[in-house]
Length: 391
Image (cartoon, rainbow, N blue to C red):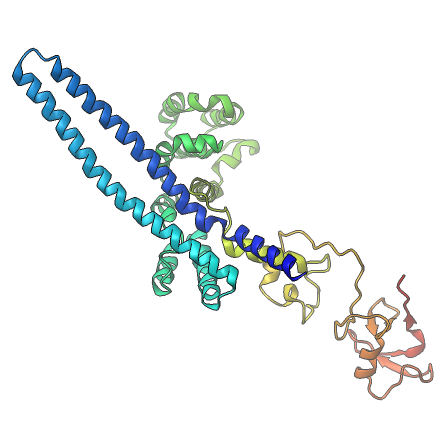
């Protein structure tokens, strides 16, 4: 049994910490591929220069081509030295994170503390609080275990989108076009469409039409319906019928920021939600029932009495295979040891709880006695309470 639990814990840790190793590994692979492509290009250039020099008609031309080949190979060596330093840094990061995961599997307290701060920093990065995240990383010495690199350029691009400027984001899309195409991303089209909408919003209809003619054809295969709807704005202007007014919704800019964040995370092997969210959501969902949140709030229910209730709003309900009854007074389980009694209005309380509240009464005494209603605080005849039997 202990072995099975240990195996399960290891699997859960590895599942949660997957991005911790995958991000630097993928970065290493991408860097190696880029370096290989550069190496092959420069080697081909040097070989071509040597061949040209060997076939030169004069000694001066031969010397010039050989010098060019030498310069190309020299620059290649310099580039290789710089890349070696990059490889070493990435390998050290991977080694450090691997040891961190091993410590987590062993249950080392220091690693658990680092993990907590790491999750907080990751949450701040995912939510756009880059300065706060950077300060926390420096303060807690988390530089080797927090994925800050993928978020560095995101800060400036997101700031430009907040000011309703698409230039930086479109440049980012073009530089990552092949990888975004593999994700079937619509970010570049949505940015281009928003730029067209801003032309219409500003009353620049001729510029909008010229922009549409030059930019929209490349997206027509996948987005023709939306393009056709957007083109109607050129006819209706800034006061279109209701079916087209969503194009002018300012919330579209927030949607672009959110889409950019998700695409950036996907390109860098990061989860769309922070590790804190991924860890917290299952626990919150396990507590959620159709009665959450209750009114009045249940004092010992985490979802009713804390900010966790806001997190639970969009989460599914927990699956309870058996019905569970709780006392309306103490919220303890009712059953054989604490038989359930139901008031005329349907409120269920445990017999033990009622005896504690009405310390002067005995549930087994005369039926003329009264008990205090836990909600209305009214005196209710004991004879009106019904004993419940759960099948």
